[in-house]
View 1 (cartoon, rainbow, N blue to C red):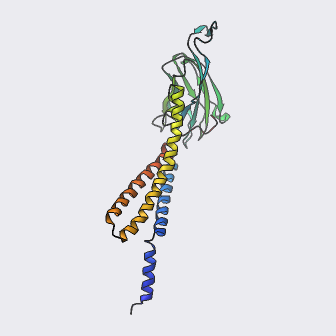
View 2: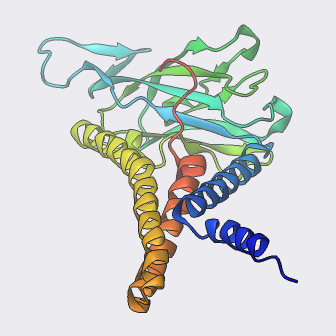
View 3: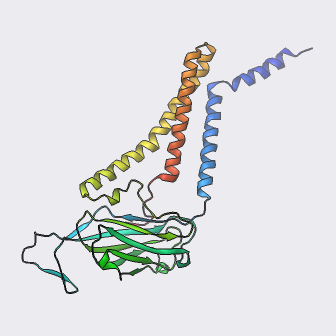
Length: 277
C-alpha cells in the first residue's frame, strides 16, 4: 500500500528546488564556484612578468624660446631643444624572480623619436638587494640599458630621465626575459605613452571610467538577467513559451558578458606599480 503522505512530502521537497530561492542559491553557488576556479587557475600560474609604466606627468625643465639669453650646454654641446624630465617605473609582476641569468636580451629603455638622453638616475628601489643599475653608453642615441641583481615579486625601481625633447617623446622598454613573450606597459590602454599631455590625461580618465563599467555593469546585467530567469519559471507555468525563450537568451548573453568582465578584471586590468609612483 502506497503511503500517500510520504509521497506528498517527497514531492513537496522536490518542488522546493524549482522555486526562486532554490534557483537563486544554485545560481550563486555555480557562479561563485566558476569564479573561484578561474581565479585559482590564473593565480596558480608561476611566471616572470617584467612591466613598466611611464609617469603621465612630465616636468619641462627648459622651454625653447621662453628663456631668452640663457645658453644650456651638456658635456660641451649646446642644447637647442626643450629639456624634459620623466620617471619610469620598472617592476616584476610575476611570481618567479628575475635574475640576470633570466635576461636573454638586454633590457633597454628607448625613446621614440630618437632624442639624446642627457642624464639618468635611479630614484627609488623597493629593496637594497635589488641593486638596480643603468648603462648609458648609448644614451646619446636615446637608449639606456637597465640591470639589477634580482627582482622578486613586486620588486622594482624608478628611473628618472632628463632628455633633450618635448613631452611628445614616447618611452618604451624592450628586451627578452625567459618565459615572457613581451614586456608590456602597466596600462593596457597605453595612456602613459600618449604624446599630448591633455590627451594623456583624458585617456587616463577614460580608463577609470572603463574600469568602473566593466566591474559594475556586467555583474548588474547578470543580476537583472537572473531576475528574468526567475520570472521564466513563473511564465513557463503560465505557458508563455515565447517570453520563456526570450529570457533564456537574455540570461545566456548576461552570463557571457559577466564572464568576460570577470576575465578582464582578473587578467587584463591595468596593473599599476606596487609601490608609490
